[in-house]
Image 1: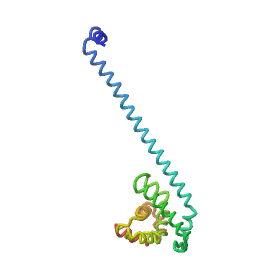
Image 2: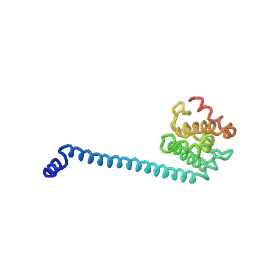
Image 3: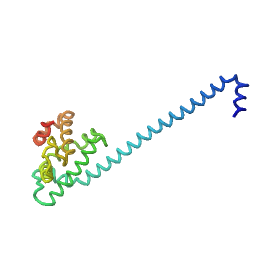
Length: 192
C-alpha cells in the first residue's frame, strides 16, 4: 500500500492526486449505495402491489363464496329468525362484510377501490343485516349503536356509513336509489 501511495505522490502531483482519487472512489461508492436504495424502494413497491393483489383476489374469492347467501340476504323479506339456516346465512354474510370493511378502514387495501367495487353492496348488506346485528349485540350485552360503543360488526357499520356518504357525493344517480337505505343508517349518521 505504501508503494502505491508513494507512486501516486511522486508521479501524479503529490497528495492532491491522492485526494482526487479518493473523491472519485467515494463518488462511485455513493452512486452504488444510492442505486441500492432505489432498487430497495422499487422492490418494496412491487411487494406492496403483490400484497394488494393477493388481498383483492382473497376478497373476490370471499365475495364469490358468499354470493348465494348474499342473494338470500338481499331478498325482500329475509328474516334471520326463521330458522338456523337463515341465521347461518346471515352470520356468513355479515362476517364477510365485516372483514371487507376492516381491510378498507384499516388501510390494508384502498378504501376508494372497495367503495367503488362493493360500496353499494356494503350499504345494502348493512341495511338487510341490521336486525341480525342488533340481535348479536343484544346477545353479547353490548350497546346497540356504534355511537354508544358497540363492538360486533362495528367496521361493517362504520364503512356502510362511509360508503353511503361517498356514493351520494360521487354518484348522484345512486343518491336517488338510496333513499330507503338512508332510513336504516339515519341513526348512525346522526351520531357522527
